[in-house]
Length: 186
Ligand SMILES: O=P(O)(O)OC[C@H]1O[C@H](OP(=O)(O)OP(=O)(O)O)[C@H](O)[C@@H]1O
Ligand SMILES: Nc1nc2[nH]cnc2c(=O)[nH]1
Image (tube, rainbow, N blue to C red):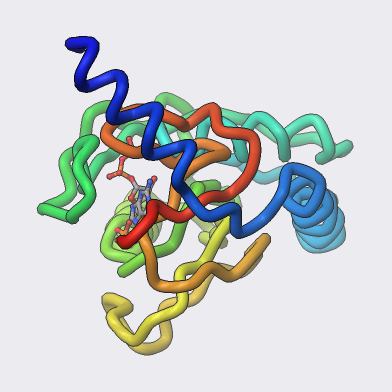
């Protein structure tokens, strides 16, 4: 990246609005972990993180789930480091056989939900006994892929703006931002 581009990336962070501080996000993750544990501790689930955005929430959740489970990942992308969605592109299919077992999908954000809807349907097709979903943030608007599309476990609701931090990127950057931020003017 050129210096001008890096300067733009730095400016995005400096000018962004902080929606949730690190401590607020961590409290929400603790609550998600408690709810997931109460629901899944006895069911020998397979937990798949959706890369890349799920990287932070997947890792943060896993060590708080103190029961037997297998963990893996799938990589699918719809935004491809841009700020608008396209068709879902599969990059890496899951490597753990989950047929006959409960599956929990973990992702950073439920926006329009095309990504989660496609992954849920893929897991059912491959024989999961049940499919549940956990997202760090749910974006509030009326453009969901279907009216009844909701995640089973949600950390925080966010307004209808372009969000980054805690795994969520702005043009590939700031997945490492320690809080949940909205891009100025977007
Ligand atoms: O609800 P939707 O409108 O389908 O959008 C949500 C998806 O978008 C992001 O992934 P992205 O395609 O940007 O890839 P990434 O995980 O590599 O950032 C995010 O991680 C979700 O998977
Ligand atoms: N980083 C990021 N990824 C998304 N994917 C779908 N919506 C968003 C968003 O608001 N931010």
